Image (cartoon, rainbow, N blue to C red; front, side):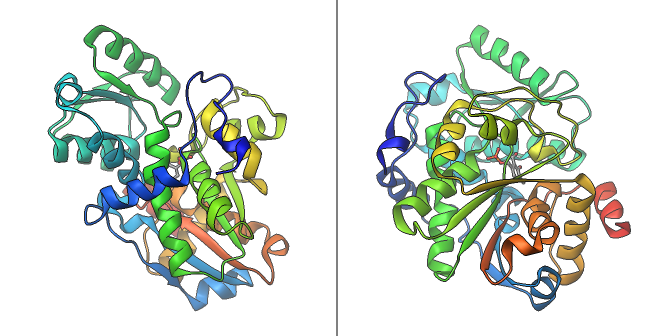
Length: 332
Ligand SMILES: Cc1ncc(COP(=O)(O)O)c(C=O)c1O
């Protein structure tokens, strides 16, 4: 890893981004426990984008999203007392499912705080995995405050969505796989909420394929990560996107530090463009993407000139779309 990425994250004292060694250790730890997801090519997506598009199908990962890589990597590293104390997390859904899945696998107690009126697909899945679900507050940030409180009172480990080096190292195994599946990539487009997926992509490409440009994407309706990256400091912004995986209202120190050092560009897309990309996935690739999962493709379809003539990887990060979301996408 380069020097900039190895320094402690400002605003997150003691937190260091993972190194390539951490990613390789995660790769070994996760071997056989996560899906080596396919990297797909689709002529209809190439035609719509006007360039070569390689889809990294994390929507086909266990729990239907990429986060399980990080969750398993974190919890497999816990000792017996830490497993007995358990974890508390806050999430709009996929982080929760991933932690519940990893908690069940490792015998760790798990409480998840979700904002009221969560995506019913994700809430059902978390409960089915055996986690205790607490519904609290209108937004992700309300749920976060309540989870912090519960963890402080119970002694359980609070697992954040972004300032977690072990999560980033586990998630980075997806980029490690993709570079082997598509060594000709020029650009890798990654959706950003808290920024773990994009930070992970930056760390791996910098170490192994520095010619690959990593481009982040967020919804213009929830631009906190984008604006933090552009401003060079952590900022708070309105948080109104329909794509719940991208719905955060603040930047996070650890991931912003890595993205600041290594992200080539950061694009904003509209929620309608995300819905159109979901439709393109359904009709052109016969694949189900939730809003956050379609954001990277939305950026490529929205900015064709930015990507023309390049081989572009897009991370289809999750497929846990609610039924109403799919109906809306098909009408887009
Ligand atoms: C499907 C999906 N894509 C993208 C993201 C954003 O990931 P990150 O928070 O690592 O930036 C999330 C986060 O919840 C997600 O669930």
